[in-house]
Amino acid sequence: MTWLITGGAGFIGSHVVKAMAEGGERIVVLDDLSTGRAERLPDGVPLEVGTVLDRDVVDRVLREHAVTGIVHIAGKKQVAESVAKPLHYYRENVEGLRTLLEGAVEAGVTRFLFSSSAAVYGMPDVDLVTEATPCAPINPYGETKLAGEWLVTATGRTYGMATASLRYFNVAGAATPELGDDGVFNLVPMVFERLTAGEQPRIFGDDYPTPDGTCIRDYIHVEDIASAHVAAARRLAADPDASLVLNIGRGEGVSVTEMVGIIQDVTGRTDIEPLVTDRRPGDPARVVASADRIAEELGWSARYGVREMVESAWAGWQLRHP
Ligand SMILES: NC(=O)c1ccc[n+]([C@@H]2O[C@H](COP(=O)([O-])OP(=O)(O)OC[C@H]3O[C@@H](n4cnc5c(N)ncnc54)[C@H](O)[C@@H]3O)[C@@H](O)[C@H]2O)c1
Image (tube, protein in one colour):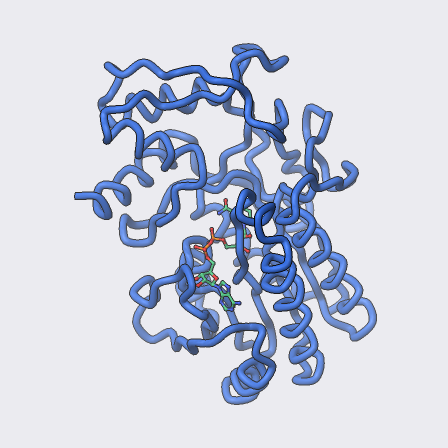
């Protein structure tokens, strides 16, 4: 098979490219480099620069590289920006996906993996979020991911494409410092930023109904995300009727206070006390994946722990902020 990986020059995409290339898959990348970097790609992996919104580009890349499967990772991912610019998010994440799927159907592509997100669940009021937990996104970003899953499943069913929507929980870490996340939108880089500026890391609310009062999340190493893609791609290759929706998480909750403590330890800044401020609107108390279905379906489970995520992310942060 030849796989097209969209968004392959991004944080998660470049890890998926690395893992799939090391797994012996033939790969081509399509990326508009809006947030990605060409240097993230390993030697020998062709990069086509262009947007998934451009049907001519999509058609040409699928044809010239004789693509048979697609891993669609390209997308916009900032919740706050999606609230400010919903039309932009629907265009990039839904219209971009629809355009790509249309090209895929016409080109006879028979395998399709889609980057979804735990944001589809919204504010789940359960201990462990299973794939059967009702989806009720609370922002345009999560809505575009849920609409994307519907598009993927419906297209697969109608046109005979094996599909998988992978719902990532809180992604952190890096395989190498060069592949680290450039953004400062998640807890780990946000705390790095404050600590390296000599400022107190902020904890948004310590009055949640959790053991230490702070929010609990399921953090997952980006290398584990990548290995889950390799497993899912192999499953789709072997099973033309597959129609999967899978959480990718560790099934273990870590509180913000615990995470900030680990980050302080790894960065050596235990001298700075965290500052507790008001809750942010829209932060659920606890979002932890059940990782049972992906274990059953793919035989996959996470290998890395939280400390390895923080240590590898810190190496990347230091490289980008010398
Ligand atoms: N990072 C997370 O914690 C997380 C969690 C859940 C889901 N996701 C999803 O995973 C995907 C990748 O996230 P990331 O963290 O690697 O972000 P990223 O911004 O690093 O990567 C996105 C990549 O897609 C490219 N891109 C964006 N729009 C494009 C377009 N229209 N055409 C072609 N390429 C385009 C960018 O240049 C970039 O290389 C996104 O779809 C995101 O919604 C991320």
